[in-house]
Length: 254
Length: 278
Ligand SMILES: Nc1ncnc2c1ncn2[C@@H]1O[C@H](COP(=O)(O)OP(=O)(O)OP(=O)(O)O)[C@@H](O)[C@H]1O
Ligand SMILES: [Mg+2]
Image (cartoon, rainbow over all chains, first blue to last red; front, side, top):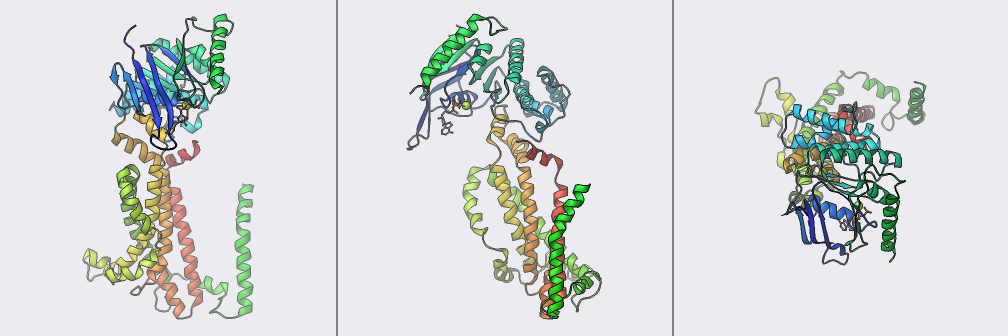
């Protein structure tokens, strides 16, 4: 295999060590993600999926083991790793385009360049006409599009996504899933995507990683070679969904 | 439009009832010192240029008060906002200063009066700017440092507390989502934390203005005070002019309300956006 772009080796995360409330979120987790791969992580609620993603983003430090980006230890956030949060994360006082060009603005691009970049990604996520709108004027789905465009506008190599469509209705969700796939195929980014929905994972990913209940490790890695666009009537689709659901069910049992 | 008149009518019921009670009571009591008639108070208010028992005219005293409040308030904001930003942003500064200012906060501004008088005596802005005579002298000598200090204290803590709170309560996700975009600490401070905390800072400045206006009367009751609405009230009391006392109280209420409303109107549109986005 080629060199992994993201790697966790013996990763461990303990919250509040040395206190009675101590909690082992992740224990001895090993994972590697290849360049251009689309990997989905599923697992029981509270098992440490967000924690894992935050460690890769450089927002939390592991208490043991290593998290690597292109072979180098992760010490903090970096422009090559973009992140889309589950909860709202847009700046309410900034318009759609001003939110999207935050990354280029931070790296010192001129106002004109910023606007041009923003326009490109506004078109990509189909928000033409809403350049000057403010976040409170947008629907939930549109807000997540802005968040995705903002991450993309910084041109990261890796996109870390924490249940980005979790709060959306199923119809909006399907539309955004299709768009995300198109964007991923056109831009060849690496995507690490957390979801509660096995269906979503099977629809999107090259590989599904199933995490156990806490202290979590990986219980299954399922490589999918079902051709896109994947539909429910493909028997392999249904079989994979069922297989993963069965494993998750076992995990939920005490 | 109809709704507007309904709302106004609703808001007026209690005040009109209140005036009616005042009116009947004053007719029954028949004692101008205990409770003057509404008409007498109105007549004081309707002659703002008239000299009141050698205390100067109403308008002159209102202006003196206004100048003091704005001076003390301005100093408070200029010091409290940057300090609050620092305390909110830097954990070290917060740990160092929170307890210290927290201890001063519960002390009412008026409790400072003896100390403040001992420190500043009758020194005024005239002493500070070095004007000893001339046409501006009465103006500056009326702005006593002791009063400014009391008013300053009133505004300072309200503004500081809200600023610190605003900065510390900026949503973690907003800060983290800029960190992952590669922002530096400085960029996070002035592009994210400052605008995100701005509505709360603004609220603090508004609350500060209210409390400095409240502290005003106490400040103007201090010895050496020879003008201002507070002075008018205390002095009218000693000469048993209760109608002037009440007129002074009404002025304080109305001016306070007007200042607050002006402040609310000044609130930038962009700050309101945050309240809409939840
Ligand atoms: N800052 C923290 N301090 C203490 N415990 C934490 C902290 N963050 C997370 N945890 C704990 O770590 C565990 C894993 O949390 P995490 O948010 O990673 O779960 P998750 O898999 O993303 O769950 P969900 O699917 O519900 O989002 C949880 O039990 C949580 O209570
Ligand atoms: Mg989570």
